[in-house]
Image 1: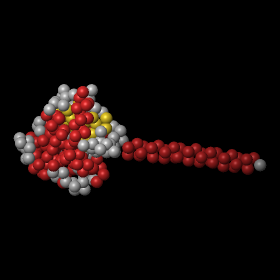
Image 2 (image 1 turned 120 degrees about the horizontal axis):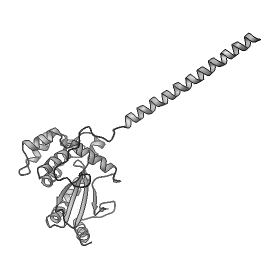
Image 3 (image 1 turned 180 degrees about the vertical axis):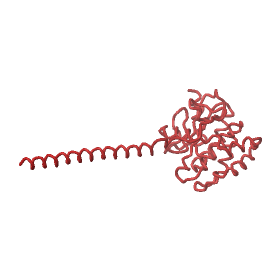
Image 4 (image 1 turned 180 degrees about the horizontal axis):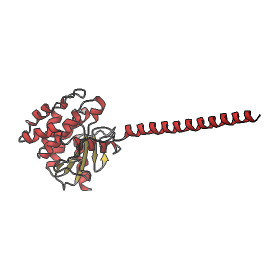
Length: 242
């Protein structure tokens, strides 16, 4: 009987050791899985390049490119992607009115550039065009180059703006922009990190489509807005009085 009890105690001890070992292995497996998940998520919103800011960038985050007089009474914020067809349609219809209001000192516009279409269709055209526009800002030529890009916008699924040579050629349409400094800026992707930061900020803004057009913080281009150049001009003038 004594020998039988000893054998049973040995079996129980081995069983307890196996249970403990299995528990330890399970915990280690969970830790390993969590580590992989955290590792996969870490840095998903970051850009490998440091953020260099274009000259004259404005806003608390310095992620906006300004147009018009800084002391204009009405403020417009426009989120745009140079590959976005709806942005092209907006510019085609409203850019003259916006430029006229800016020239008259009635409107100041902050442009915030994003790269949504790159994410939706692949490619780098949104990023490269936005970087080139920031290079133009650095040269004091943002507005005319911005307009040239939209006037020469390719179809949404055509990543023509990924070609940096094409972006440099388009700069030739803007007096005084094309040169070694601009070309180097485009080729080096000097402001890629800045574009990435702007894109991340847009993702956190609560807005999810382009163009997003805010007049004094209010979205004026939402569904059912029926905005026209004439009604837009009136909204700007009314905002300037308030």
